[in-house]
Image (tube, rainbow, N blue to C red):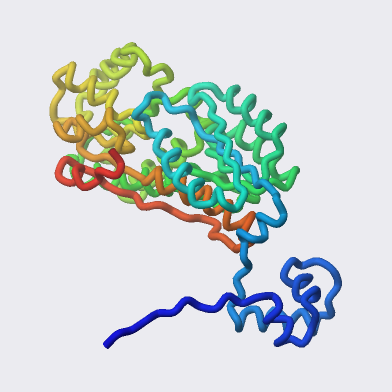
Length: 360
């Protein structure tokens, strides 16, 4: 038996007008929500639009209007060629290839991860260029708050990527639930460490309190143990390392291990778990459960030799693609979008790392 699926006939504004027994101009005013139409007529037209499943010809409309939609992408500058923040750019470029025919232009702006002032300087540049929409990583809490307020004042729609920011009029958030990823790391330690053990939480960050996603991971981590270790068998210690570019932080780790002889676990809240792995290998320290974030090249080798036991990973390429696509859906297609689109929280180990080649 042969089955053929035929393409659906495109519904035109003319078809809707004929069925509603009104002019094409009246239907056009309802579709674009401009001009005065009586409530009864508007209700009838909207009902017919829904019944006939009318889909506007966006390409034709954008070509006719000759409008260029300018999207600004505002993310951290990658610290190396293989670093995490190169990966969302791959998804952003893929999204652009799909939507450029609709008259979309994308400009990428980057800031230094250890310099909040560069965030403020670059955000001013974005505002001067008056984009139609912005995808941003609210990396530094204070500076992000100021920029978000400017976007809201100018009624410029924006989408968050990687990190969320509370109490603002965002279009959507695309990324991992940082709080839950911190709780997951805590659970892995709770299952795999002795009942009485110390765990070191390491932030490789300058002005850590100003970095929203790291704060959320730490909160989720500590809350899990508060709820599941009421007798406080496990001791949690937090260490902030502000300058990891040289090995001066080795002394800070030496002191932590010397003071806490029952230290059995280390949790690194960002993608720099490899720095602790290098330290453990060079100091020939064994029996430490190490959990980090993100499947970047520097971390992969240490997962394979089991210095890093678990990597908690997200899908940065998917985040980049979805962030741009969400802005497109909202601004150009005028569609409702989800306020939050959480990407998966993946646990990567030596045993399954080869099945995550799309992250490599």
